[in-house]
Amino acid sequence: MCRLSVVLPLTGLFVLIASVLGSTSSVPDPITCVTRGADLTQDGVVVLCPPGCSQWRTSVFGTGIYAAVSSVCGAAVHRGVLGPSGGPVKVHKLQGRHNYLSSYAHGVHSQALSHWTASFSLTKPVHVPLELTSDTSTTALPAAQPAKKPLKKPSVKKALQGGNKDCQMDIAMVIDSSNNIGQRRFNLQKNFVAKLAAMLRVGSTGPHVGLIQASDSPKTEFLLNNYTQPKELMFAIKELAYLGGDTNTGKAIMHTAESFFNQENGGRRGHPRVMMVLVDGWPSDDLEQAAMLARESGINVFLVSVAKPAAEELGMVRDKDFMKKAVCKDNGFFSYSIPSWFSTTKHVRPLTQRLCALDGLLCSKTCYNSVNIGFLIDGSSSVGDANFRLVLDFLAGIARSFDISDVGARIGAVQFTYDQRLEFGLFDYSNKEEAINALRRIPYMAGGTSTGSAISFATQKLFR
Ligand SMILES: *[C@@H]1O[C@H](CO)[C@@H](O)[C@H](O)[C@H]1NC(C)=O
Image (cartoon, rainbow, N blue to C red; front, side, top):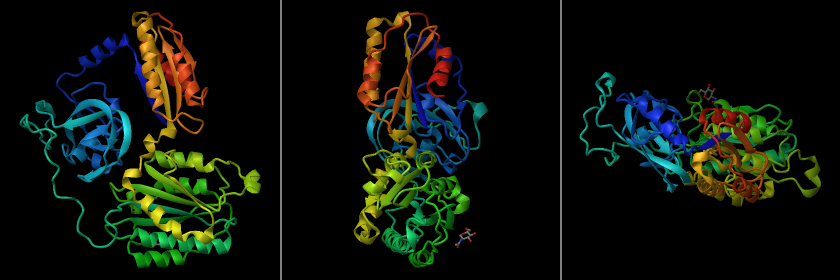
């Protein structure tokens, strides 16, 4: 689960800032490739990125201005202010905004995001202390130079032929090969998958497709780089043999998320990862955890349900909400229903378009339904009753922008002075209005301030 905690220590703020400033000096703080903008507490701080961050599967949202959930070093590579051997970058904190744009630059594919609560931008630092000069040597740059520099390094994409250049996805197709589907409908499924593959137009510079069959145990039939020409791919799909067994789709998703997209297995760096999962009827196992794991590894999971359970079959289905729970809750973008295997043709085009719609893909990591938000609220005497109410209003505003529901986001709150009080936990309210009302009703404690122990308390009580 994504965990996002908003710490609002009003009086504690001085203490925190003072201690952070003490450690700034002139030496940049080393960070890792996965450090996010939100992890940095200071504005204008110079941090030191390790080498090779472009090779990491870093998550970057936006172009020029990045959502605070983005990897700082990944964004710096994307922005063109950081080379492959790492080095210092300066991080400027900015307000949250709407519509972070996706783009491909310097080998990094950034993603779109509809909104986020904080942002940052990046520049090359003007002065870098001598003891840090590495071979990157980004020292002594003219002050006027920063982030405005146009990104017009030669594009990494080479002019190889073949494939739909507007669809650069790596796509894993997880198909249903269970007893439930049966040989006849399995063949219809193969036709459908072949049509999808044809319309996707695979090729060296287009989408790549690999395939996994779900039954008792998942079976990887071919990897992303095995067939990059349409004819070979069509042939491989036609040759697929029916397996039979249970519909352990969750197991197949888990298996695919584990290593299918790794570079050793033919996954391409900087290409969006998409998993399309076909389910005939309903799965035998649990999809929720598996799909969450896949989303958290940065895979966009599409669930295509064909011939969904009829009313009289629902009694046999272990989880009636399996569709809702398996996908990122994003207006149904990631789930698709087809009434029957006998009428799939007209769904080929819309589904292809969705699989290729880069801007529609929200990284699973920021998927709202996997967010647990803990509010840690300063209730010390120095805040005062009026300000305390203001803070609650502010938090209610934040909470309102999330989709709080039983399958959506969750919020919880802890108030602290010297002491801590769990106001309500993440699972107390599964309805937005109730959660927001509970937030507004929190009575003011008034007392001392002990932020450190409050954070430990919240970690344990809220996020256990
Ligand atoms: C796919 O490629 C891998 C190596 O990249 C190879 O080991 C495997 O045999 C290939 N599979 C097929 C079905 O061609």
